[in-house]
Length: 435
Image 1: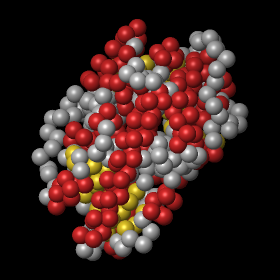
Image 2: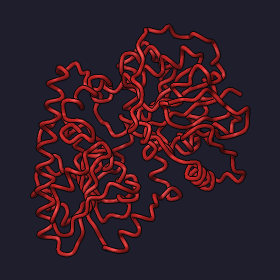
Image 3: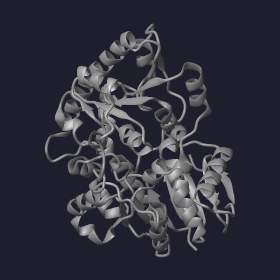
Image 4: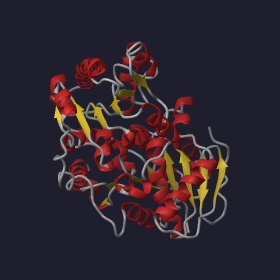
């Protein structure tokens, strides 16, 4: 059977769900290659034709799709950036026009996203399939409860804590400055929006983040004076500059800035999470943990998140303090039914594996897409590091998947290049050396 390729951009967010898909595909008899997208993309022409699953549909991902199809592969996508969105406008912004031409199969996580993509790409209607998202099952399933010894040690040492997750990447980017981040957003295509020009859209984004940054830092200072011995853990977004937070909060008693460890484990071990409308609020809800969304400022940016449907929302610091004193648990219900497909038999991972299996058997016709001469930018060292993991950890997580899903016979797994792994039987996939 033809191979299936599962591309990873960020290990912490994507690996476990890809292993679920990969194990299901291996059970169907496919050799599965899973690992950093930059290496696999650099080797499309040297890899046997098969089905390639991408994590998104922005301009960079669409250019990768074009390269893959030119080399004889067929392409499929889910969209991790749309996982938390309840806005058709925001979801469409993640689907670049090039994706319509170069993606053979769009996999959607629920009815809302499905309708949105059909409206956005009407010519691709026969290529849009609703499968659900494995991340949903991972968060709801007790067998995949997040664990991290560093987080457990912290909880044992300091006791209960309030977790503050920040997400201010436009005004506090990890690399470069706000202008360079704007240039990155332009290059990826996520500022494309019929409602406003890219620069205006980006500036409203920055303004919203400034409002939220002020509110979040004010809340932290109030909690320090009013929470007694309770610790406060601040976890900046991985794309933020952590040192800014370390400097800003230096000297505050009972406040720790933590950038290491599994973010889901931090959420699961916290008494309560405070965030600013990001995906961690949805993750907390699916984990069954209390969370509050503190989102003052421009409603253009604060409303289109599923987190703000299932978490109580505070428009002011005073409201957030009141919610922290008496957390609400009556949010949610069936609010997510239109957004996240709830399916158990088959699971989202099994549905996706089945779609990729059928797609892979159609692969093999070289030059299925003409080249425009455009290509995705090469990976930076930081991009490669975000997708890096060693064989021992991948094997551990694969065995976790097998145990949780009732698979008795472990699948063989081997590393064929740095952070590139083959799951299942079949001819070893040994292309040329990548980046």
